[in-house]
Image (cartoon, rainbow, N blue to C red):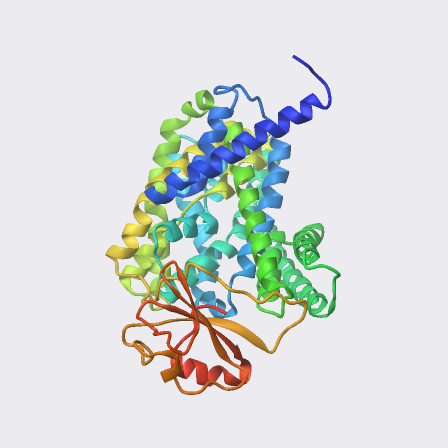
Length: 491
């Protein structure tokens, strides 16, 4: 068989292409089962590994770098799509869960790990590693189940998942240092946590506002360069605070929220590019994590990992339910938020920290965390959607349209396309477009989407219940259009 270049590179690219294609194609089955696609990606990686098809990979340093970049850009993508209204509705409860909730969950899991025989230092480190939730895993399950949560519940889950990674990372690094050096944690650690979060917050605000200012004024020659510029801002938002001993994960999320809620040139294209990039990085990350997982070594910690995974399903509700009671959440809402605390790639990546530091017991922790994540996403994958329906937490929102029309521009425009759902009780249901009151000169109905049929907007077109109506409207005409059609689905 040939060796050397270009054969080695061709073989690497062929193998990567096969693994990526298999992961994406098999992801359809997970949607039907209501499970996070990450589970399939990890399984394919393990099947391709050295105890499967024979691909040998044990470069934890590369996996850590890939995971860090992936998490930073995934958080940036999530922040771009987080409306400021979510902060108004859910910042207080989500902030408490992302800080005190993470600490309490880490403590409970650590105490249970101690009962299973792990030394206190290793047990608490294990608890810290699995203490944060995974936004991508939570919402991939909800979307695949067709569930649209009520606003406050969904916003709380989204913000908590975006904000709780920094605390888990800080705890993991501090407890790993304690395990390696033998120096106990003290008040200095608490001060470092506050400073790290503070620097991350300030850096995120500063870089977010600066990036928003640049994007509103720069004029690039082609639209494809705008996602490159926003990616550069994301990397700066993560790297700069980390160099200043701050939290890059908090910074990159805050910066993305500020940019996403501002005037963003070619916004549709930029958001699509970051969404595609986030999915690509998720697939790569889970495949690499699967390649790192050796079934024979994992089985040695199987019982401990399964027991801890099942206990985590109880520990999170024990922490979340009383905390959310302080903010007036109803019992079903508290129970659901407590139950849907999916763990995804974040804990597995954090488990690499003690491995890279050569901490005592790092292999045991790594194997246990792998099982905890698998148990967590498997059980919750089958129950999250059903739980939302059973607890009556679905929002009374119309189904999203199958088609989307966007205006891409390098500068803010004075008009936009809005989509309106024709409810059976709507005043326009059953009317023709000619029957509607005359539109202002700057606004007009563009087209009507009925199921999979796209209808031309003519005077004789009848608006039937279930239609999605696309309207071009200017800011000064928005009041008239909303009075006629109701609340817009999306801008």
